[in-house]
Length: 161
View 1: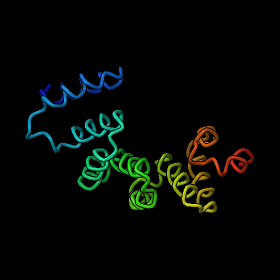
View 2: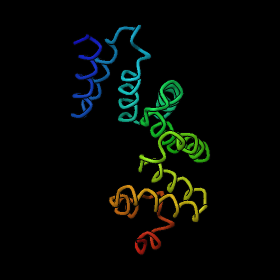
View 3: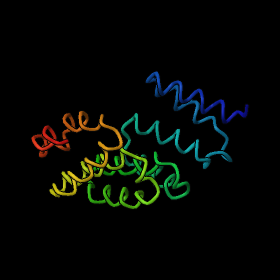
View 4: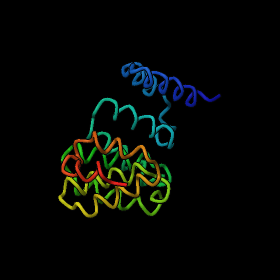
């Protein structure tokens, strides 16, 4: 097993346990020549998501999405960080761009688009996106009922089939 692979496994374990300092230390030991590998970028992205370091998530997420568009975590986390920075229109644009690659299989993409459309006041698109997410996984309806971004649609969600 390569040292980088081992470091990634250790970092993932620390992240799962909420041990962010230890995860940070493991990732810092990855050799410079491996820094741009997709799995390394994903690990760093996950770490900064856990730390709520939104600007850094935007940087790593956009880099991962641009270099490895097949990795949905780059797109999803990039958009989520933009939303956390109150840049909802940009977050929506990121996921609309990702849709051509991930739209047929990624329920969270449609769920997050429902949130962003709702926040922007476009309830028609918000409902449409939520229906798509719920067709992919019925569990999204329960998540929608609890999501503050979808508060304006709560009554609609409760009666949605």
